[in-house]
Image 1 (tube, rainbow, N blue to C red):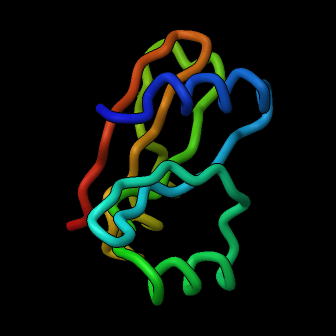
Image 2 (tube, rainbow, N blue to C red):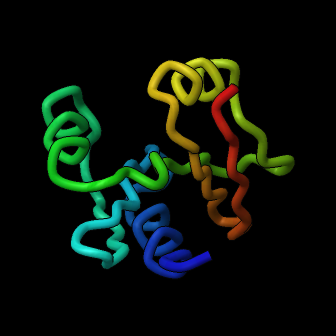
Length: 97
């Protein structure tokens, strides 16, 4: 997965708080954007690019898994979620249903 090292670094810097961001495609180039995800930011990126993943971290979760909240939000926005675990440095993706 592209950008994982950057995502783990951002998760480390935010720990124990959650870090958030987006992986987008703009002008045929994929980009990792560390950002607070609010409605305004989300709509801005939807209008100017294709959001490939909504990204956030889970801190110190031995068995990395999506929460019900993650699954519900993934389904609501109809965009895959990428969840990185720190400090374990694992990741999972969930697809909208």
